[in-house]
Image (cartoon, rainbow, N blue to C red; front, side, top):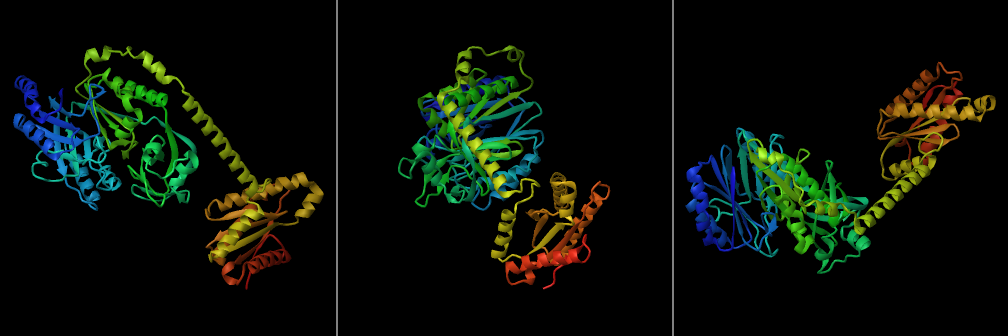
Length: 585
């Protein structure tokens, strides 16, 4: 495997540059030739010209490309250019396919690519260049993700130096034929091909978790039931004006799904307070506001560099989000140059990054994706090579900045507040002795069900002869027995996830069964009675309970339900205790 990299400003210059590749191929035949073009120029004619020139000089090469927001050569951001990377393989096959996908066809073509991957012998990796601006990336990537989990998936979304310019991917003759393609797939297949993928985010969550309550694709309407803009306006004083992106991009949303954090960058805000994001979210997602801190980002970069170094790649590709380039401004080399100390590092700045993480192909945003490749085992000199020349930078990266300390203070304080509120909620809604719901909380649930017009049944239980127990054995023993009865109730109701139980007062308990018929509720009541009788059989102070059952469907108002469940309990006591009586309207 050998890589040639050419950084040129004029398309015609590529002809002369390719002479070195041709000389190499005459001496060392290749199993496959892959040409990757990261173009800083959006004009289609310019890109068509460089593709045709390369195809003329290297007729056996597979050619792929994308427009981008910046080009990376030898670990540095270059001036605007065509970055042409020619990779010749010794044993690996590079297989390229292009697709024109229309909205609504994402799952179909994703499945087609899945089949291509699974039916290619010795495939190790699939690279995706996908115009996610035009299609629903989630549907497409979910379909591709059904391929073998052993295959490494990575890729990029096109971008441009100027956000107003055209962004697109291309392959082979797609430009000359006038075909607008949406996706290019490059398969790397070979028994001796090895690849490692990694990524860095570096932004950290701050504040409390929030829930997406309304969203569609990349459009985020509501968070916690409020317009999405309110989060920025309330916590960061960022209004919806012409400077919204400039003020908000340092504080993107951090989405947490499947044990993976992923950033969601706000692109612009609409008049109704909804926010257009660069990548999609879903209703029910957990989001945090996040902050970017130089020392935190660099710490993650150096950790990732250490991991990729231990892989001993021959070459490294970086796919770095253009948002990070904006964040760093003229210091962007700080996060890309460390990888050049491992091996030759090239790549581009993207409009989104694609990577399979924890078994799922994710459309990332504001993320640095790192890809290491090699053919064969590591070379002996690579095994001995150690990087020490940037130790000073690593120490600097590990230092904790004031911003990081402030954010940590806010997060810890907010977590303590959340925990305090949770404890207060428990105290306000549960019975301190038994751990069951208190009467007010259970009553509110019953009232809400009645107000919504939903049917339910109630079971009212009372410990038989409890006053005698208290008078004879004392209140401490009585409290212990109350807890034991509550534990039996919890155990039985664990089989009925919709059921809720509460201590209604003294030795009385109420069980709320939403949607249960009178017969089903009577069955639950008998289980409670029988379970307690069995539990108490061998106790020193055995006790029993009597239970009444009523169904809301039999009554015109909630007060009547309470009245008749209490009357049914009275009838159970009157009939000899330790029994279930069902109310009749």
